[in-house]
Length: 482
Image (cartoon, rainbow, N blue to C red; front, top):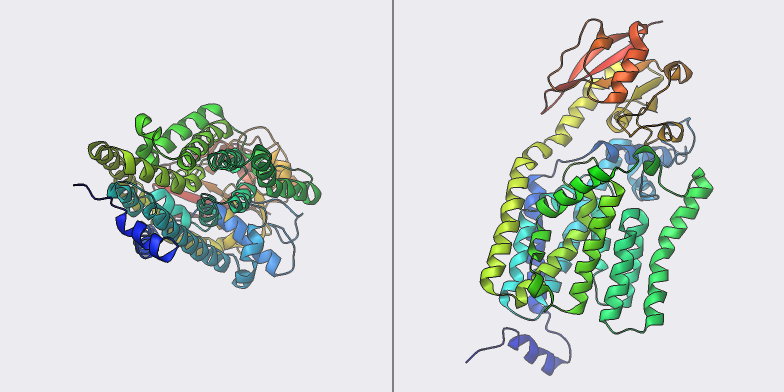
């Protein structure tokens, strides 16, 4: 005699007239605790771009406007327009205070989303093994790292997770997530249309919801055009897409983030509910979007992270109907890959924050007195000085963004240093490279730095060399010779 594993929930629903909630709440709390484990391990991870937003927020707090440089033009310095305003109340202590607030906000948003995800998995019908994919939360480095990195990703992950809810109101978080992360727009459209059709809503209503999901992104594009003169994020111009890099990125995101491996089940995918199949389809469309967008230069597949909770939910739905041995194989693969990434990359990633703070502290004195500092890594440099920071990548400078080349290969023209009155240079040496004599013959890490070094020549002298902790690299800080 077989017993329905959901028998107790069915009895509770019959007697009370509402779904049994005790078990989903308990599973949700357990999921949040599982998500907390890798977050604690990798809690000090951050990236340079997070400090760009933090500096903009500090200038907003000081009443200087939406600017990366205090006396520079208003600039669309970060992809998620408006994120700096979210950080504004916490930016009174400067960029580092804003960064700290962003890290806490992202972590709490992701933990709340993980709790909701666990409760939703508990509500699925079928085998108790449907809970097993939640174990991946305990070892998923991309979700943990990007929730505490200080960027908008943790909040976007929470929005993308709420967009999985079985309600027409899902259009709101889906639209907001796509407005902040434009590469999510195809995902949001397919998700809203697919889940709407699965819920047997009318065609007119489904396409009405699809139009609504476009509205936040349209508002952001119009706002950008009015404020900055271009509807697309500045990063689109500064970092043009590269299809070959996009292909490697998309493949890596599927193979090394963990949750996608739970969906390698072509037969079981046909047996899950229409709602979950729509989530899986939207996830596949997002991978194609990443391929076409050229991926991202940052570690741990940041652009894939917002859709990972949805893929975990689909993996749980598959485990609810699949044979136990097949579920075990998929779970073993997802856990194994995630563990390797967590300890291989996580050991380095968890030291990034302290190393950046040490870099900022060491650079403060040599940068003091400078009025215009040129660098590729403008985030940490902008936290180390109040001087105007001239951006060699164009991420915060519209005039540099449109120059030929990618963000590490911009073809800075001759005379640019003089035109920008650059009196300090911050350049990163290649791994293992030592400063040469003369200094501009040194091997630098990025093409644009090599180009600028040769243009600077003997008009600049080396002030100091600062090691980049955890690597075999160091920065040279140079001063214009009067």
